[in-house]
Image 1: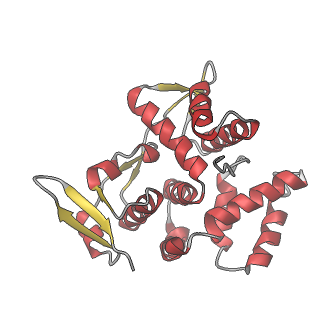
Image 2 (image 1 turned 180 degrees about the horizontal axis):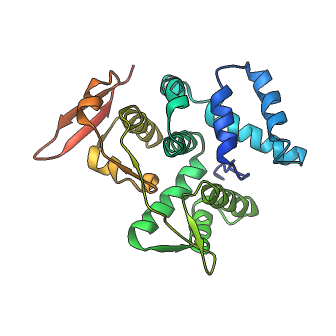
Length: 238
């Protein structure tokens, strides 16, 4: 069975900011129209603009029912988040919305754990191995790379390769709870070692200092020890 791709358009941060800011202010029908109007300055082609609107809606508006509460909690604090923190929540919501994006950045993250520079051809090859050797996979891989390059997550170097800037430190307790719940959802796990989550390849642009006190205060999360020195974070199922 051919795996669904979906991520076929470069997404810009200010498009994500706009979508998040207005997600709770418009009906679904009106939101499509508002986004179409907002994107006209950046995307002139009707088909490309429609694709971008579909992606933005999937990332922030039409989220999985298990993520609605998490999303709404983040939207409440969005106005006071820093630029870097907003990038972090967009990253998490995009991971949850698009398995292709998740798989592409997972491959990138694994490679960056081994080497300082990653050729785009290597990512392209790995995504074709996973999703099939077809044109749409090439387009989607390029869309992911162009998006996260525009976000400042990767830096282009010679020979169509990429390297990392300095990692972004995330210490906001609300966002730590957010990413724990997002990653557990994405991995379809109910529990995970905190160290594995902290260093997960999908989160390669970021560095975390988890506040265990704050995590323990979250109603949807429990922490417990397994063996000697292994801390497990678990998501309670409602």
